[in-house]
Image (cartoon, rainbow, N blue to C red; front, side):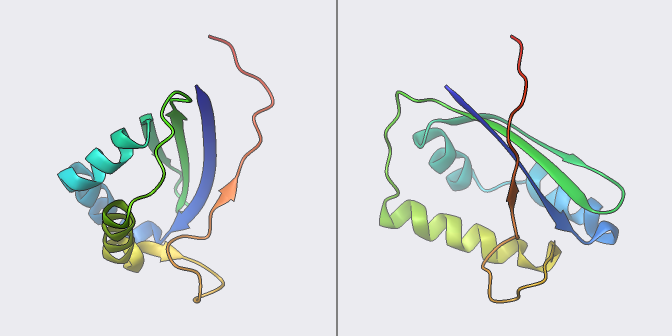
Length: 106
């Protein structure tokens, strides 16, 4: 199992709407995530709009993106586009900064 963490920003004033969208996440998005071995996902909000995302990925799942999963991910990303704060408008989705794990204990 691999652990990943990253940050990106949303418009802080849209936090409640962003949460509502995730409370009502499309079932197809959840299925694509599970099929890719992604689990234990959490998103945490800081008042400046920074989101901290943590997830675990099952190494035994070697799922490569299918056209259907890529389409679902693209549609979900476009659905969320209005929330993202970014410097480069040509970037699809949020401008993600991956974080390096320095310490972990089970």
